[in-house]
Image: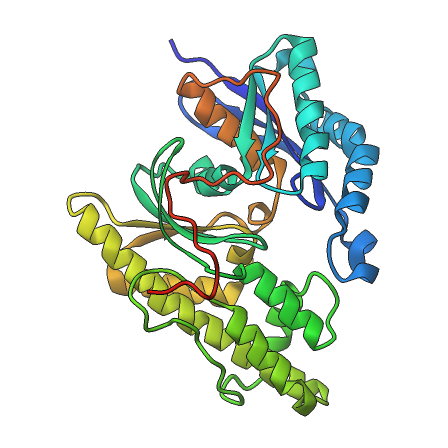
Length: 357
């Protein structure tokens, strides 16, 4: 007989200290009982990016408070939890260790099941919190540290069919923003600036766009923007560059997502065509509209997480814990943090922009 499952999820892979309590009832209905996130953006502003040691120190100072608030907000007691899940990787090692240690300690004291969660799997499964999405489905994972196309065949079963060979898309947004004088994190600021710009002002390169397959490259795009900087002198120039940059990104994603969809169709002819877009960059409205249009053209049903669940959060970790626990998976309390932890361990390693096709 099925029972309700209530999990605490803890996330400290980078610069958000997050905890959440998620419950799935016996009928499969899911409710996020609490979702507490403490951002470190202000602490890293003057550095123009995340400083790992500072981030870890901030996690250590806040983790107990954030977890307690998540429990209090959920109206649950620690003893009522059915399990604890914490991010074990990938991410910044010194940051991962804070949340992972906290999660293992709580699980050990309560004698509850512990689940060590791959941060990327948290993103990959997030849309299943509120949608009955069946496997397999095509996933575009776009964040500050990762840009990948994966076929999600089941819990813990991922096949990578494309990836960036150099920079992640989120990083490309942030570095472009920094070059034109915008504060960290730059992605949302680029999106805002682009609203008033002329996207046809600058013609920017689309690296490896015409190469076969689904791999992407963004390093050359950043270099092109660097070379344009002497011409960027006014706010209007910045708006036009932001709009042109975002248009270029959308054109790259349109072509590469189309290739990924075509590959998915060829492999899974009898399955429903489902496209999931997840990760921090999935909150960009222009990208959402672009990929929504493509999905309709290709006959795919698409799913985006709610905006508040696109960036790093504890709810996705708690949910991934529930999903894995239902498959009979538990982890030992001796499990270690994994700063590098690919979803598809069998995917070939790509060395970077010099890779030959």
